[in-house]
Length: 169
Image (cartoon, rainbow, N blue to C red):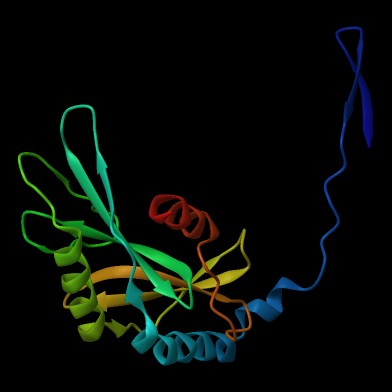
């Protein structure tokens, strides 16, 4: 702890937490290859969960399809109700004057998952100490699947998993 007097007041600033482990190991190219292969092996088992349909105050509708793997949500796929197709990551669609059939959304999202492919690249996510592997459908990146730093395990989106469980039950 660091103590100093500022304006007649004793100020104490906490010490930063110790650094545990050697982060350089996380950047091993073999781990990236393993992470890509882990997502590629799991992709055939991804399924669309019950779509989350939100209605906003202006009457707009926003649809997300949680992508499930072994009862855990991996990521959310944005759905475009106008195009009746997935929307690229980062482009959630708000639609007005349209009704959305959740069964149709699941069929379309499951069809897109069958056509999806893993992109052989990764982002490193520092807070989670994990890789984010992009998954594409056509020319769109539709998912970012998180994998442990060593590339061995998928990391669920726990917040989304809880949202799915609240929404479904």
